[in-house]
Length: 106
Image 1 (tube, rainbow, N blue to C red):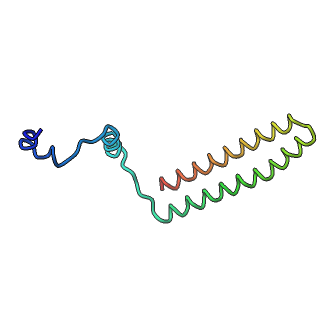
Image 2 (spheres, rainbow, N blue to C red):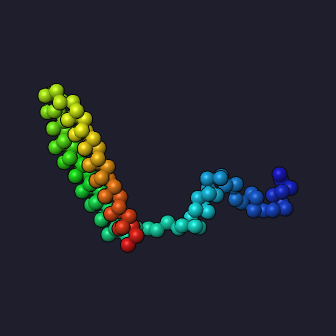
Image 3 (tube, rainbow, N blue to C red):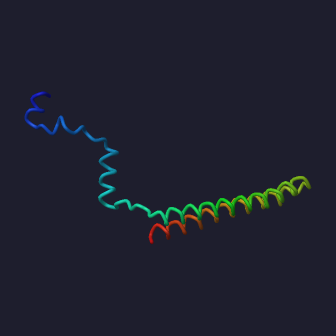
């Protein structure tokens, strides 16, 4: 090994890279990362806060109805309301991600 170092001084200067590091370097060359501006970061933060608020609002509203339906023994209605809640959460998150993608692209 000592002989290799004298023949090629770069061997001792740079340690070997892992497969992960090499893959990340290739990925960076193919699709370089872009930095977001402060305005874009603020817009994304506002979108996320609005999405969380919308989800919380739906949870409060629909969980009250779910509890009421369960207390009355209407388990099918409760299951349907739970599905509606899951759909509303998924839709709010998808809308948020779409809008964030638009902001990042701008």
